[in-house]
Length: 578
Image (tube, rainbow, N blue to C red; front, side):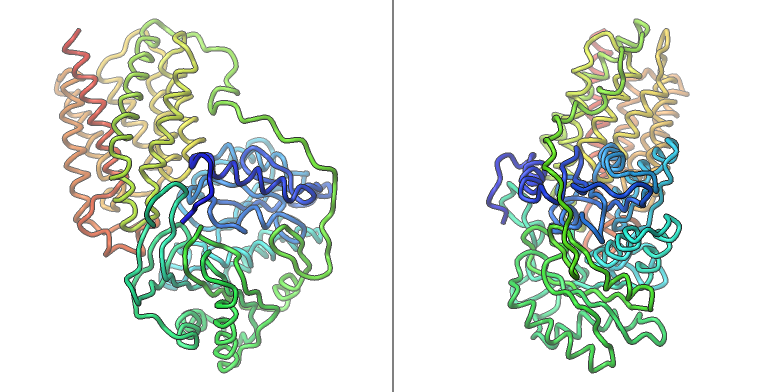
């Protein structure tokens, strides 16, 4: 387990601060991650990598020549926020465009995608290449839906080496996508990992067993099998990769990766068996790597990656690289004087808004009500945070309760900091931005965007009617659905949200007062959340572990029900008092 920390909530920022102090000749700290200490030459492409923390050397350890220009680092196992990605991009961009490349996880796709959109609006040529190397997460005919694991190293190096030799952004994007199309990984776990401050692992592997197809965010594997000897394990890891070998290809870069607790001597024993197995199948291994490259805190496990080479990929794989955690060839890292530590980040959502926007008296009263409802939601989620984490750990990484608590705390604090003069639109937009910025992850992006959209739809009116609330809720739900890309029946928060929104609209249209309408709608959300227990997930991290989630309600749908039930109770009680 993770034994050294001060405040578990500050674990990532504390680790980044220490990392930047150790490697001050190579990296500079940015609010949201790190960039190279020696800036890129003007006009070069800035390859930016990133994702949740807990995977060192990924991602900060791969910032350097022949690799990334910067890394965006979210909380442990949680995607970075849009604002973090933008800050790192602005610090790294030197006019040649920005290429984001990262593993395909829903929260990362949402946050980095929004950052790409905003950069383009600013005139920056921003692109994205998703990494999809994990063969256990989807079958070959759904390869684009796979998640990214240790194969990210191969794509990072190919893209970074191409950018550093001066290739255009079109060419860097093409080569990164080409490398991804020929990269495959497969992993096993022997024991789960433990989040900083937690007292038990996110999952357990039965004694004498190993879990095949693990994820790097603490997700368990897709099936458990008896422990195998090194030669047997080498074949188990390699065969799915060999099954997807491009026709005629006999040369491969091979990466054997430790997930956190497997000792190097064990990795070397296994690599010897891997080399024997691949060579027996006629595969020539080119410049292999064996060590820790993409970990999962203290997880006991290993993964095998193969990048099937052609001439242009082999040239880039052999290219020199120099970063804190990965070095190839004779290149040495450039040096510049240590940079001053940047000022602490301002409260999310407040720094860029400037003067308070004038609001109507009705809007200010609505803002006061919204503050109380946010506080109530925060308190209700805090009570259920452990339960939500347990639900999430069934087929995910177990951080849903932590993320919801972190996001609601940030939303409440940001709303309180605005004072009493603001209207409901500004308050909810600010609270939503703070939620997204602080929580990160898929739920952070969805709840933050939904809350901000709720504020925009409510606006600053002279009076607020029940129909206005129902219309605003519908707008927020539509925004969440658009961002998440899910549909009812996918076992997500939509399965509680859609019946809630539809019932609220029907109740308001029938003439019910808002308090009563919210209570009936919350009951519909409860039914929708409960119904997810009988569903199998069709999207997100839980999809590869669908069978394990059967019988358990979706954590996102459950947290949605908890919040709207709390809101309904508070709003109804207030109406009765009035």
